Length: 85
Image (cartoon, rainbow, N blue to C red; front, side, top):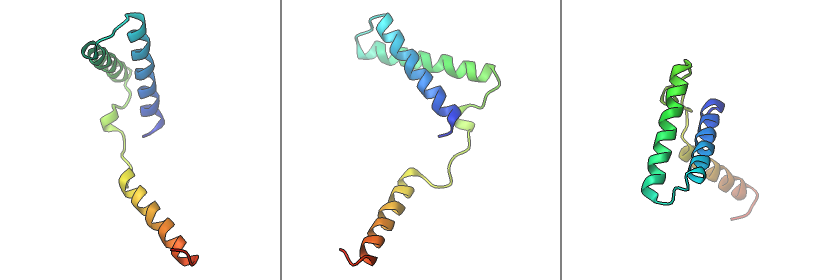
């Protein structure tokens, strides 16, 4: 996730939290609806300003799952080479 996507997500979360508190939204259904609408608004702003939509941002060459697996294997191999099991 690049900085633009991270910033958009944090802004969406912040705006949703403020709206939920300001409007005293209590039900899960209304909270989900609010969350969806705020996200939709933010996507519209990104598009209107000529920004790159999140689904069009470049993706990493390796998935998080693959990186975690490689990290576990690396740690395991280091432990074995140190004489520990």
